[in-house]
Length: 268
Length: 274
Image 1 (cartoon, each protein chain N blue to C red):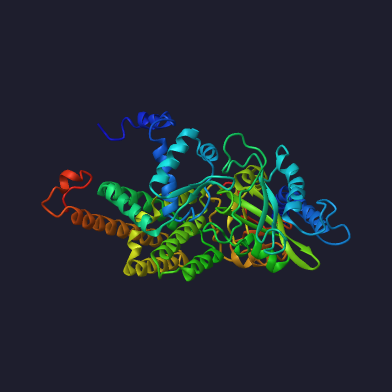
Image 2: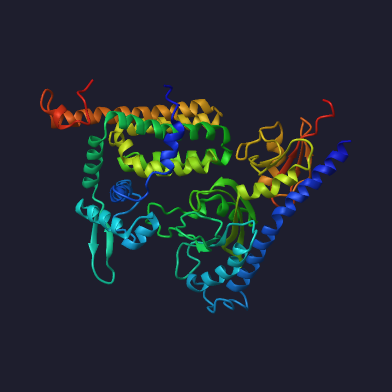
């Protein structure tokens, strides 16, 4: 049977999939965890109250409460009582590194490659369209973002990559690509750009940025797309190598790795 | 022959202008009210405080823009005042911007007139210095009204937008901008019937040559119109100067649309049977 057959049923199933139910608290927790790790929510920032959170995310108050309890247990949030009380973000770089590492361990190679491909499809298409649609002012803003990039730290380099991709998406003139870029940044940015911990990768991120700027200046859409997509492919390859390294360190070769860690097969 | 075409194109450009100019005039009216409120003998007459404070100014702005935003069939979907940093005694950075119920960005449940939730804490990672953005930068430089876009407004509403801003002065100093947003999707509905009156290919572009709407279905909104000589013909609009219609080497007319800084690029209709 061709793969395309049955597609209508699958898309219908998505439409009628339950919105409420099991796993909602985990989704809320994951969303907020990602935002804290990505630096979207700052250290010390006060989170909305349980009921505000429930309302804005469209979940039950009990679901929001459950998510806040987990966040507290993970040390990402602390609660103060009293008049100026509430839940406050606790950002600790070490805890953040541990979270990203555990996320890397929990994802299979298949999932990592799929994530990279999805993100590259969005960012690559945005770059392709942007190269055709950039005005002189747009080009100047890309150059400005590059000039302000702080390559000394992993966080600085990642923010520069994020700002650059967001601006490229905006230059493509597509609200949908902008929204998807923002969503993917909050969800996957810190994981995907883990490689920026290394100076080589930070230098490379700058080379790619300059390459894309040149493609935009010369109206070379295909070049802009390819340079962007290859950057993602490199970041994913780094992640898979890093995952292999961590897994092997935890379970030396020939040990119980394949039994204890079903998410990952033996290294190729 | 060419004169007749030229006149027909100018007629359509005037109609485009008359679609958008009421919104421009309204923003100018708000500017007048705010300048009276913020300096001179009647300062504080509406807000009740002679000092410029966000606390007393915000209700004035809401009353000013709210009625228009809630009017049935209004062209604009957002409007308000953005203060120059440090101008207001009680808020270093301040956006007093309201969104109409047609704008569903970030709205949970029933949509109604509501205030844009802006990050005004400069230490926040999401904070953006709005004085670097086009809708602030250009009026500040020229001292005149400016039309920004079409652009994806990812700082405010995440939508494809055109923004009109005009500088507000008090005692000779620019103390902020007042302005309004309109969705490009909404403008398209108003502009296409006007553009269809031109029998050739008729495309509305901003001063950068970016397409806002076209009667030619292959000309995508947001793309740059690449026609020989167009950039030069639009240069006066880019500098907020008015200009006369010109004809490009390929025969297209470039006709400014009133005071909007938009221009109609009208390609000659093909000869019958051609």
